[in-house]
Image 1 (spheres, rainbow, N blue to C red):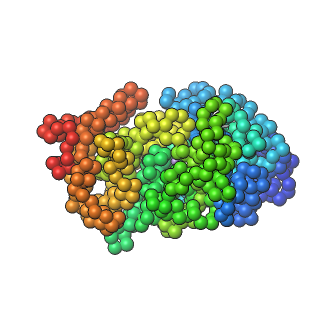
Image 2: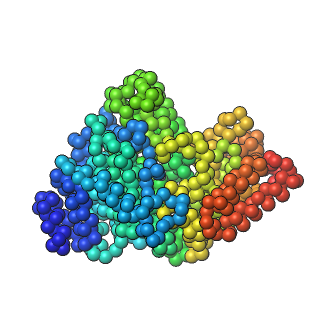
Image 3: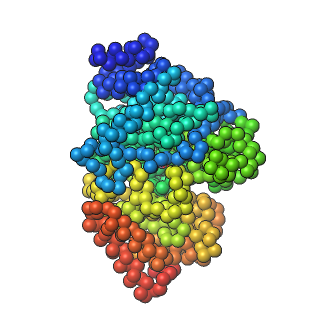
Length: 626
Ligand code: SPV
Ligand code: MN
């Protein structure tokens, strides 16, 4: 270790902790920690290795310092984030630090680097006085793999670390192997001043600033995991830039094994904006989960291969119940290491919306002691739990349906890619694109969803979210789309691309499909990849035949499937599809400089197909008439 760093680090921690840092031979790492120590001025520094004893101490620390409280079931804890100001990802104060001479594309939230650094470092200055600084090492993707990205996290939050222990692979040994070479990501977080309830107090000073020139991210005055757990959505932004430089893809996608006939497993990835059924799909009974949130893709010997960046789930708990999400519910109902966040707690039991039980009349929640009708400081009634963004954090290793390829350093081959939105009136429940470019553009780059509570701001508004990755783009939209289009060039056989929509409604406003019907759609997609089911050519893509769906409904869900249901669900709604094209084309024409011309061409071709069909068959065309 260089003398200048050794002097600072030795002075800030005991000999044991110093030895753990000295055993990693990396100047950039030492410089990062020394700088953080000088800036944040912690009372002590704890360096954690991959040793289970170090990890257990973190778990214990979160309870001792009050960031988590034990619940009745063994291993369960609850954590609260500040109410109402810290209940979701905060896009407003998440900014890229850009060098004055090289601004980013104008739709990215950015601030001049020197100015932003001064601001966020100002808030971090002395932020850990009287507290322990935790230094952690993790790895994005499997260790000893071409996909792997080592990460160093510094934080004063045991909750953040505990979450990371559940969500990521340990990385201390990876750092030791790496030595002084190689790229890695760095995250510096402080919860800032805390209230008596141990939640961040100074919401006006919340900042999440991304210094991509150094691959360092600063986060302060927040605890919500989407803003603080460096390896999750903060790292995704750096990964998108790294993937852009190196020719791979960093996606906001689940990875799952869909089980076909005769023991065949076909791997699928899926991009769904928050609260659109992503985790529910990855956790479907009968299938196996590799991951539910983040995937890296690489072309290897002509094959698209993918890994789960994570090893845990930070999932939305609302509407998780024994009927709709049996596998998740089962795990949540038994002892095991789980952090519940922003639920209501009464007598050591967590309650959430849509769990299938009534809320008790009082209890503890993110706003403190709660009772029915309680009003917050702004005069608004406080809900018992966060409606759309109360969550659970657990390790995938606790799941019986975990896929055995989770840690394969080569990842899994991708058979299909699914794009799913929350759309009441436009898309059919499942369809397959005509080819890679059509799927990437008419499905992925046209993805829309009604907004939900996973981000702060209004809910229920239809918003554009290409590949469900819009919030994390750290390069221009045009470049990102081009990278997705180009990815297939290195493949001998590109994965099939599908679109799903679980939220289609009929004229009476009721959902047209049941929550578990997705179990059938995935089986259909798996068979399509292998050419084992037919499809009908609609203007928007290939749709299933009635004859193929009937046995799938019977086999998978043990239920009948009427011709009327099929016709209702798979009727092509031409006016709504055209209106969607209007919205999407407007975005690409007006808001995206340098849109690749093929984007508008593919959308125009889809419009022509829809209009041609309308001329002969009218506005709403039954699949039986195609
Ligand atoms: C999402 O909102 O997409 C999540 C949760 O996966 S967060 O950590 O907030 O990003
Ligand atoms: Mn996500």
